[in-house]
Image (tube, rainbow, N blue to C red):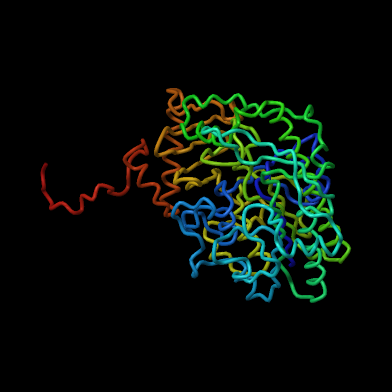
Length: 489
């Protein structure tokens, strides 16, 4: 089985037609979803690029692989996976797979994609590297104009400085965009692999629609801002919530930007999604033309979501809201029925799925479950809860989250915990952790999170043991074994 893995960065699931957006044109991803399995509740293990991508590479939760932060804002964590870490490309190489990766790597400081056996241009970093020699050669070969932007959109930081660039107008035609370049290189790789007859794994990792949204006029102005319904959580007050969320809102300058500009930003983000959908369409069309479709499993997902104004935030950060933890998840396997599944699945589950499709042992991907039984329409036993974690970005900030069909609990050791009733409050505006009527739910979810963390070996549970009502213990956390029998205070 050949494997084509298509991935975006910082991609809101509600920007896709197949996930219910009535305005954004995403016909190619919609067609992929209509002919495969669309996972309605797919999540990232952590809403930050490098750790999430390391989980995909290893099939391990971040606390286990320990690559916990993006190197650009690293605060002392590991910057590369340990050399003895299991990774799926190593297993595929043993099965004689050609391995290709075109696009964003962002998987470490000293080890690049080639370090793991992938062929393709080395494109490090978090944003489109528009000064990369291969991209410049691509433009020169086609007599295309260089990268140039105008009309930057940014707010003002608390100390009065200009905020991060959020969007701008790009003075290039679509063929010159970095997204078009990536799709072109992926197609070239696909054509090379088609000639060899060997099985292949080919990933195309787009840097977008991560901010800043830098788009040609056609896409910058594609959607009328009047079409945009602002996120209901734009009414966020941060009352009863960790103070870090208000601080992040100030960092991302939300309140210094007029609301009509926020609406325009969302419209531009939509244009970015359509641009990427068109490039994915080019890759899928070439897959068809090469006669590879019937022998190729196709994945589409993202590393995490994006706020785009939700909760008065941009980008991502230490707030475990659905906007940044829920991601698109589409898998098409030849012979499997088209369907929509409601089970909780994660980006990490793609690892075991890739391994099983390639005929490899899935056991080393210890925190990953193969999606193939679901994709084939079966009804296996499946976990009723989802776990996620966060370790910090600009500074260490540990969080753990559990959500079930209705409720979400977030444990924040430095501050207040959060509990949301997603049925009554789908936009997570009201923290009900301290509400007396929620005591039974709070106790149940604290205990369930505690048990699952212990089963995983995630030592975060040590903080929970004395601090929260986790019920009766089956172990001694007090070091009393060091006291001589009969010792009294």
